[in-house]
Length: 471
Image (cartoon, rainbow, N blue to C red; front, side, top):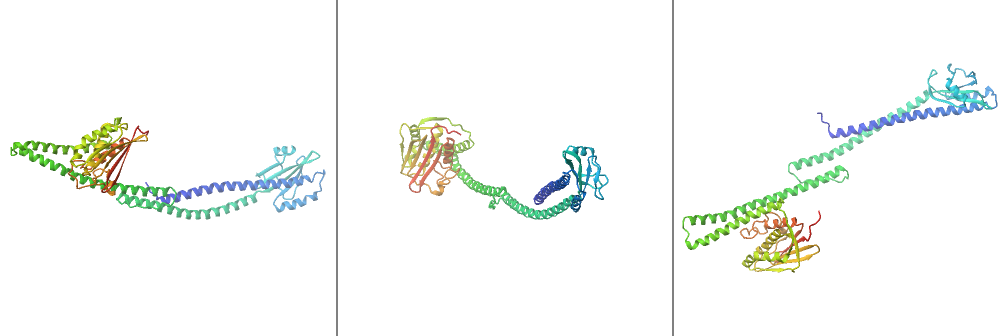
């Protein structure tokens, strides 16, 4: 299949439209000019015919009075003659065409007092415009005046007009082709820039900036393309960051698994070979149990995150007293808080209700409270509940080390840990806890935010609607 460049397609379409428009305009204009000229000639002949017929108002006419009309009309290449009531000529200038008689239908119209007007007639040697005016004297038909004028003058005028139109079309077409070429080159150049930008994006270069100062569709497309390239770059950067964290996560998980597995393997071999004294066996079993639980937590957090992310869990929302939830969380984590000399305090009124899935709400608060315990030493942790307008506000505040502004921006991301050095702690060490929290809160159609200052502690604020929001 033959390929035609877009530049030539544009140019060809413009020229085709121009030529078609010119053909239609010239045809219509030529027809209009011809019709106008014919009509104007007939009206002119009719006017002279009426004047000559009026010369018979007295019943008779001096033939000498007709010669001035003959001289005047001859300058316009027009001839006339007079007929009596029996269509016999009684005034016929020299050289008048021999076939001068009118048709029966035309003579019948004249007898009825109607004027006969014919714009083009071929009954004479040349095509002519013909006008016949009846002559009445005291309401009695006395004959007719016949004027004929060749249409060659009209045709000549029309041809002259067409010639001028042709010159105008040629000059206009030449200018239009030049302008069309320049405009087509301009638009094609803009499209070429888009194509070059597409090649860059395809090769992985997203540093694209296209001019979008023009408000047309190509300008809008260039603007959208620039935005798309920017978003692709952001996505690539985000993928790179996630890949980096994933690698770090795999390294951490490998280390976390290797350490307990090595410990468990050594203890099991010692038990099998009876090299461990009986009084140490109970401690060995306890250590094996702790290391096994540690590995199970890692697997559970990963499975939970993937289920939540792929929406494989269903929420069963109920109205639950918030103080009941806080007490369960406190009971679950109080020992861990005491190990770091932290005090857990509940601050909520008995009537405050939260609309949520009971088990998932426990999971949210346990994860966030664990995070506060992890980064707080010999301090205080408050679990607060406040009844807002059509929502329940939950705050978890601690007096720990706080979080830097840089870390706050990424704290909800998967695999992210605000303190990389703390990979060996027992709570939230894998960088998945807060990611799970955010996913679960959003599934409840709620919001979560964080306020923190380094050295002064951190506050997590969760807002959960009391009823399901309408989609």
